[in-house]
Image 1: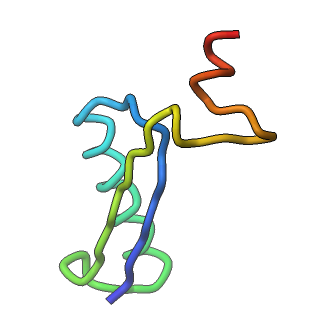
Image 2 (image 1 turned 90 degrees about the horizontal axis):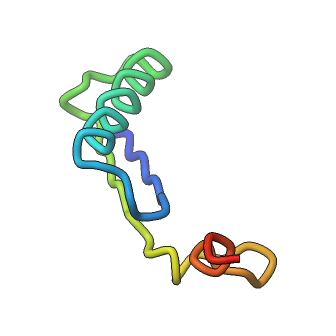
Length: 64
């Protein structure tokens, strides 16, 4: 069973997350010929205050 795990900064709509799940599932089906029913997708939304690059959080970058 293929498992795809995606971490995103929080803020997408439920519709965007649902679309992402569908697109990822379809990509795995095409790439490895797995049945869609066997594909697992986990989307983790990370708060902007908990995601940093270069010692600056997304929240800090947005406020500067």
